Image 1 (cartoon, helix red, strand yellow):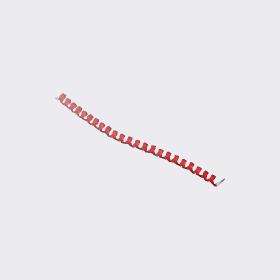
Image 2 (cartoon, one colour):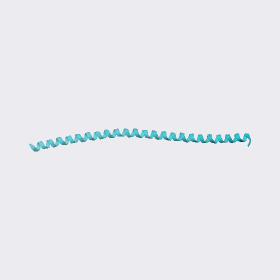
Image 3 (cartoon, helix red, strand yellow):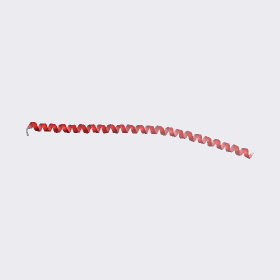
Image 4 (cartoon, one colour):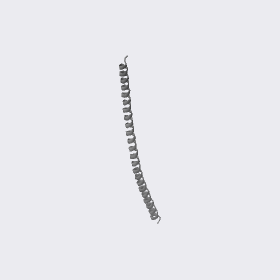
Length: 87
């Protein structure tokens, strides 16, 4: 084997290694990008859930307040009825 053939083989080997490294780099960037997108989606989902949670809590508080007011009205009506029957 001549020196020229050895250099050609070394160049071909280095080119193959470079190609494999480039492919690995592209795959790593793609994975990183997918992970970043997934993280962003999860963050958005968490923010939406938190927002919805707050509105659901407010609605529950309103319903509870309304139920308590209705209970108070019913209690007062029952007292009035008792007083009228007792008189």
